[in-house]
Length: 241
Image (tube, rainbow, N blue to C red):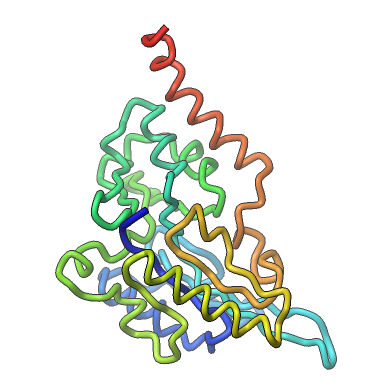
């Protein structure tokens, strides 16, 4: 499998939110009006104009206390269920997958899609919709920068080495090497969904400890993915007899 991938080493993240700010700046996305909700996480969730968010989670207490940071973005699935869902709705041009990088890209035509269907097809609960235009948005891998030979804005801004980006094989090698190092002190460390996504997280603890949608947990969303795929493939099977 070729294309590009991110490797995100959560053991190095300090929640500086440089990646979150860089994403806003490069995409020229407006700030959101927020208020204090008892957490340093701000804003509280992804939105149409916040397509990258550093999530904060407190885990354990006393000597076992950990403050976990999770810079969330679209995972750019290798076989993107949201793209399958769009195709099954008869609008295959609304969600594209770049042949060179593997980036999953939403177009203006997403305004014609059933948002609830598209969002429910995503095992990571990423897509968000603009209430006015009905267009759906998410990270596009900074495809304009990558095509110009630059790093995605989030990677370029990261001061700690948390964010890494390059050819998929290179990132898989880096991820495997770093995992072996981390497991010496954190035996439960793992690479999250590495075979099915292009944003590979190294988590020192169980993914659900960081955030409930960090990993593909299956369940209703997994069912929706297969339902969408079957809806798309059904007519093809009939044509082939």
